[in-house]
Image (cartoon, rainbow, N blue to C red; front, side):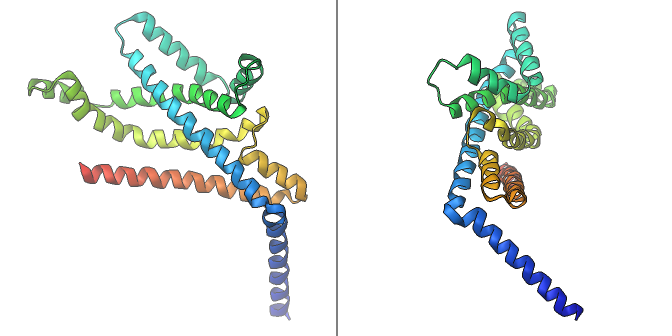
Length: 236
């Protein structure tokens, strides 16, 4: 009897799960809506990181400038951006700075994440460069390397190895931070998950699905960085 009851319970769970999958993913092609939200999340993440990495490199270079004013400007930018919540920055840009423009909300989000992530990435770069033994650079210079050559062949590979795991965490953080872009009307993954749950009155299933997708993105990022690290070590 207990065995039969267990089978019946499993069948009920399977039926409920099938109904949830159909209602939340299949009915009305809801899976396409969720995929569109995922596409927006990835677009903002990748474009924002690209912009943030470029600006972060500029900020890092400014840190080593001979001008006190330039170094002060870089430090001020980093302090302000690291201390400003990304949601407030998004709202400031969307509702104030670009309010009278025709700039798309997604483009504004990319700018916001680029500006914000640049401060964190600049700190990552600075810490990575500081981790390289300056004695190795001096030795390379005595062997005839130019300043640029010593940086490219000695400093950059080692700094890249130091920065890789921290930069990986920064990427994952940006993926998670994009969940707030719905506040400026963007239909990202989190917003479409919430809308789907409200439509089907089955929030548990879609929220769990959203968590699984974000976990997948995080572990996919980890895998890509791991493979990149192995390829670099093999090439070296």
